[in-house]
Image (cartoon, rainbow, N blue to C red; front, side, top):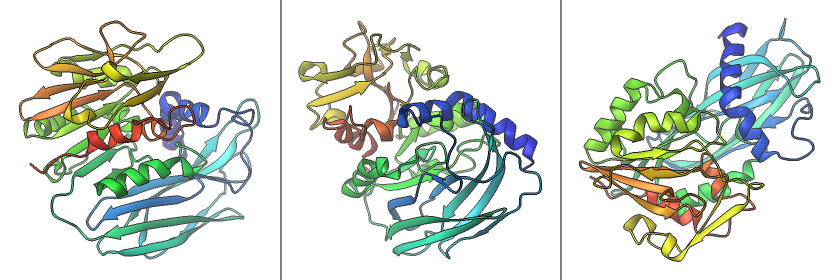
Length: 364
């Protein structure tokens, strides 16, 4: 990819997603500080439990030296179970300080055989040498597992600098024995590519996956739902543009999000008791917490229902479901779903249990 094309892609993504991610996850006085040369974002790729044959993609951003890419060469040396699918060299600016050279490294795992795999990707950016730790536990396939496709992968260059935020998600995958695949999204091709969705039971669409989803992707998802699949959409006002993109898909199913968030200093809303509908998707869920959620309304009561009420918003919810032919569409008024089950303000409730319920589905 040329520097100019890379710059355009980064700018588009940053405007809608990356700045929001960093603002939320690094909300300290250092959030806009110049990154340390040689630092990695995320700091490691601990990908948890996956199954033989899964598609597992991830990326990291490495901060190099200097303010421009002229004459900077990139060399990579991955461990045998990792394939480098792309390297992208560009610059990123924080506040009013000069830009930093950055290198994005996109990877995929070889999941053809089971085993415990760990190693380091050696990356040289000009004179800077960095090692990126990578680890995964690849298990044999089992009958009856829920196949989950996550678009986009949470393990990506804009998500966080501290990979421990993913620990609650990795525990959900392990405890629920999900057969999960992760796709990296670059905006240059359909987000669902040429994948056969028949292999999956649930598709979780959020982040740049939602942002770049086009008409062809929505047609594939409609067919998937009609065939008995479940699509989970995660969006909110905080993630600029995501509500409009969510509505492109969910409105025909009788649901509609409003691109707003509660006022008053971003309080945490605790929802419990009768505010959570008794439903198979909410089994075992007693209390939920939300910060900066957006509401979703049911516009066709023959199709949809509110699963989790939204106390600040009349006749709306923070989570809703629509029944569609043989399948379902679920909408969550949170965008960073992996942070929603892990953040300091929202953890401790049954957020992880609800997410597990949404992603666990009997085989068709």
